[in-house]
View (cartoon, rainbow, N blue to C red):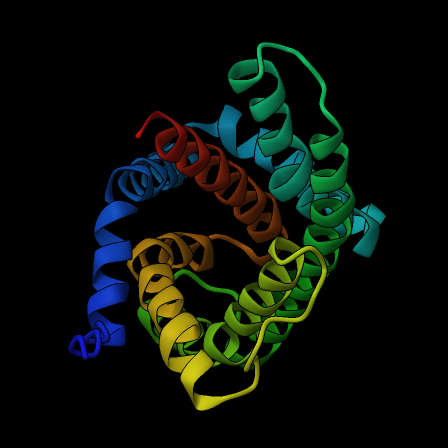
Length: 226
């Protein structure tokens, strides 16, 4: 009998995925740092973000849902249609939008709710005693116990033709799917959320939406070109 295949350790799979994400991740991270510097240095840019923040305050959860849907669902799919498919609309694009728009709308609302809670719990000032606990709670509680498993489960469900992944709630699924995705996520998003939490709370969702859109589009581009 042939020898049994050796399973790759979850942390190794996560590091491998993080390396694959290195270039798009660095682009988004450096862009976010540049935007943070621009917010501090250029009053015009600060005013523009302030207008977005005012719109978010007026629209409330509607803004959060729409920005999440556009950033995570609509813009990446438009990239696929107009760049990868040369402007040709396919049935699969409608199917992808039918999943991605509600998924990222709900995720945008959830992230907004979470950011508001963080501001109430820790404050809304750009100082280490505020930003560090916010980043830790975000990346080591919210992400592993909500954002990461929900995304892996639901995208796995969609990718299997809307059939639930086998062993979805088992230790093996966590080891093979959840943990590598979580490690790869940390490699990209820990620096990004450090920037986001340095900004005032009303500006955080617009910046999150921008980072999400850039990340999904760049990752799709590089994965396609590779």
